Length: 300
Ligand code: HSE
Image 1 (spheres, rainbow, N blue to C red):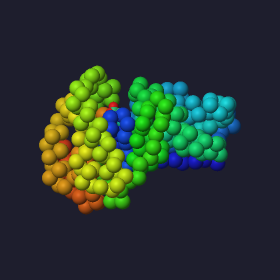
Image 2: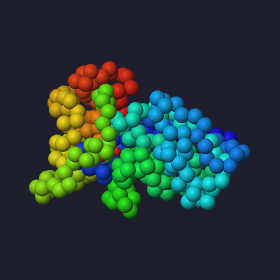
Image 3: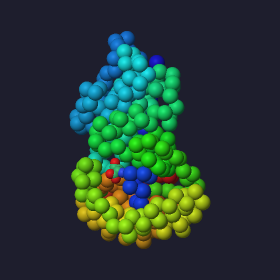
Image 4: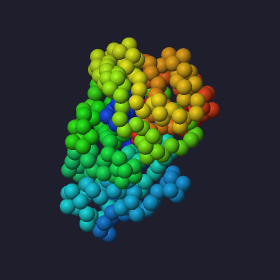
């Protein structure tokens, strides 16, 4: 028997929630096939869609690092399991590519062996997988990828996470400009210390965004989607960022910022039509082709 699982792309930070807020979108994402095998141990039998960049060594691949950590926890490392990884999203895109693989790996193996753990219990194993790729420990991609919807992380070390209600008509337009940004670099350019006034503003906006989501208050959501900490530094890595922001806001978006560490950007919108218009306007700025794999319109 075999299982096929899909793990979606995610938008981390959502402007004011650096490392503590993220949401999942419908696509793109990664597929993983897991099946039982006679030979003991976990093996990767195929990888597609990665341009040959991903390691076949199960101890080096985010998907199988997560799965191995899970099997280790369950005392089942001698199980014979074969894994196929089908990457359907770009690396270094700010869409949580390594998180998606890690989640898919842990989720697929858990499912194959009869679901001994709940989704929530899989979180630390998926985290280990992602951390093996990006070196940092933040659940704002893995959390929403695994649990779906919008996820808030009160504490990354304790993995104290909460799924938030999603307003009915909240949509996202996500556009991937054709450049690559290394998460490591995008983290290094952030300041170690931030002025108290900026911290206060950011906390106010994060609180406002959470309240807005809970109360389906689009006005409050819109007033709250501002990032005064990471965006001012990271936008320098994304040519025409502010031009794209103006275009998205002119199209009626509630707010616009960088998806995770970038270069992808997102606009949150009330309704599918506005999301489509914002997506088109942003795509124009980045010369991305609408309806290509660079532009994604999705309910949140
Ligand atoms: N919160 C992370 C960051 C997401 O902004 O660096 C990147 O994976």
